[in-house]
Image (cartoon, rainbow, N blue to C red; front, side, top):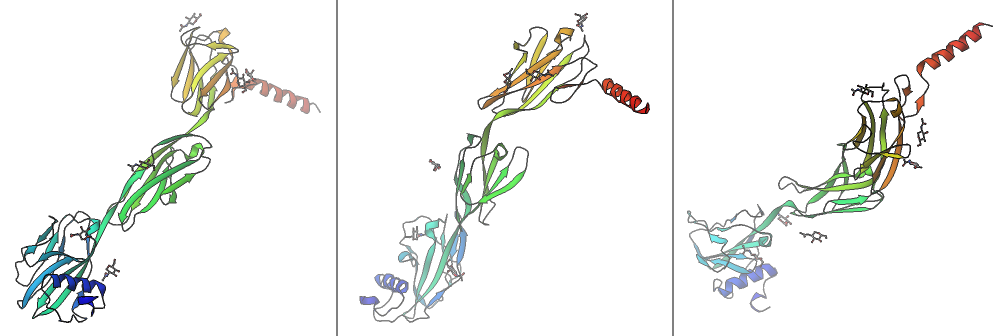
Amino acid sequence: MGICGYLAVPGKCLVVLGLKLLFLVPAGVPARSGDSVVKDNITVRQGDSAVLKCNVDNKVSRVAWLNRTTILFAGSEKWSLDPRVILMENTAVTEYSIKIQNVDVHDEGPYVCSILTNKKPKSTRVHLIVQVPARITNISKDVTVNEGSNVNLMCLAVGRPEANIIWKHHSPRGIHKFVTEGEHVELKAVTKEQSGSYECIASNDISNPDVRTVQVTVNYPPFISKARSTGTPVGQKGVLQCEASAVPRADFEWYKEDRRLLNGLNGVKIENQGKQSMLVFFNVSEEDYGNYTCVATNTMGITNASIILYGPGAMHDVNGAAVLPRCSICLLVTVILLYLLKF
Ligand SMILES: *[C@@H]1O[C@H](CO)[C@@H](O)[C@H](O)[C@H]1NC(C)=O
Ligand SMILES: *[C@@H]1O[C@H](CO)[C@@H](O)[C@H](O)[C@H]1NC(C)=O
Ligand SMILES: *[C@@H]1O[C@H](CO)[C@@H](O)[C@H](O)[C@H]1NC(C)=O
Ligand SMILES: *[C@@H]1O[C@H](CO)[C@@H](O)[C@H](O)[C@H]1NC(C)=O
Ligand SMILES: *[C@@H]1O[C@H](CO)[C@@H](O)[C@H](O)[C@H]1NC(C)=O
Ligand SMILES: *[C@@H]1O[C@H](CO)[C@@H](O)[C@H](O)[C@H]1NC(C)=O
């Protein structure tokens, strides 16, 4: 205890101790409560400058600024080795203020201005609060997984006050959806609908939110979404269309019965454009009519669809199955009607 024995507040004790070391406080002068005034907190952003103000009057004989228990300035003499701490050009005689440049989080804490007036010590406390805008420090790398796998995404952020993290999902179809809150996202047994970009938004109201995204790619086997043909008369250009959704993108092959069709041979051309493949007949002949198969393959699987190239008389549905020509149905109905009218 020693020279500090009569003090109740430990912080104050240390301050007084610091001043005693400076021979500012004569031994035996009791520091009464009420000598220390707690001022409002000073809030600054990391990187900015903080000005710590202290009012003095002309009766003041000794002054000092302390950071916790460390003396920064004693009068105009600098004790601190930190170049960021400077004594301000105090124009008014009644001011004894310092400036801390490029404030960092370590600077947060209590600062004390100690004054000796008429052999009486007095101190002003200032609490420096350092704010840090929310900033994402690490985020998961883009991932590619197979349908049904689990995906864990991470987004780490710093900030003072602590950053709040939310996730939003932007699906390839452009639907924005709030996913979850927090640093981690767990997607169990992912479906292809869950692919897309995941946006991590870190905010703490100090500045604009920090936003970064992770791309999640979900592989899935092809499925044929469109298999279409049009009735084509002999002597004209004919086209069979096949469209497959797949990740990675599907490779296409065309067959007539068991025979694989090759691009540029037998009067056909195969045109692949993204998710679509077209079998083009330059000049349709009788022999071209028939049942064709479009095969779509990727690393995840294989699928096929039958598409029929038919003459101008026939009707067709999307699956490629031929139906009766329209007139056959009309004929059938007419026959039944006539049969019924007979009775
Ligand atoms: C100053 O900041 C401290 C710590 O953050 C807090 O406990 C106190 O209530 C604040 N005082 C004022 C006057 O804002
Ligand atoms: C204040 O003290 C803390 C703790 O010792 C230190 O990290 C920080 O750099 C100091 N700041 C100034 C401006 O002296
Ligand atoms: C980000 O986090 C990953 C996984 O925890 C780690 O391997 C990587 O080193 C981190 N990157 C940085 C820049 O901290
Ligand atoms: C299509 O083939 C027929 C018979 O082989 C031929 O007469 C006709 O000129 C061809 N048409 C075109 C546009 O090449
Ligand atoms: C098309 O798929 C069926 C059933 O999966 C299979 O039996 C058939 O061999 C396939 N056809 C071709 C040409 O790949
Ligand atoms: C076309 O061929 C496939 C198999 O190769 C068969 O399943 C389908 O029924 C055929 N379509 C027609 C209209 O004959």
